[in-house]
View 1 (cartoon, rainbow, N blue to C red):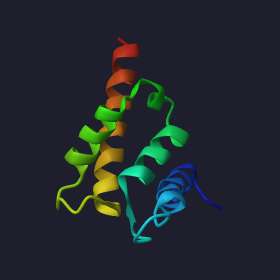
View 2 (cartoon, rainbow, N blue to C red; view 1 turned 90 degrees about the vertical axis):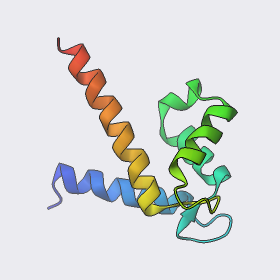
View 3 (spheres, helix red, strand yellow; view 1 turned 120 degrees about the vertical axis):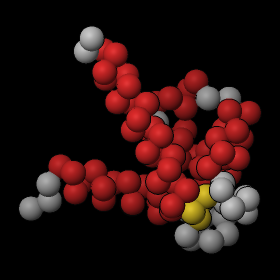
View 4 (cartoon, rainbow, N blue to C red; view 1 turned 120 degrees about the horizontal axis):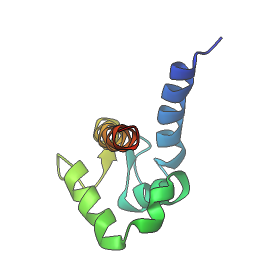
Length: 93
């Protein structure tokens, strides 16, 4: 049986592949695909402007190929987890 952590990891991977490959490579997210993933998968999307998504894309795209590969996506998720943790810690003080 899948543990909660394994289920979360499966969700992380399948979410990436759900949005990747609609344009171009099946192994990367274009700016449009990243935007769609954020808009449909994260409630914080309501607070993100086009320019903030563009800034995010630039900060994640370490090799400047205009696409986000899985490694770059995992950096995004790590940053997001850290922000959620910070919020959790603040909420419990």
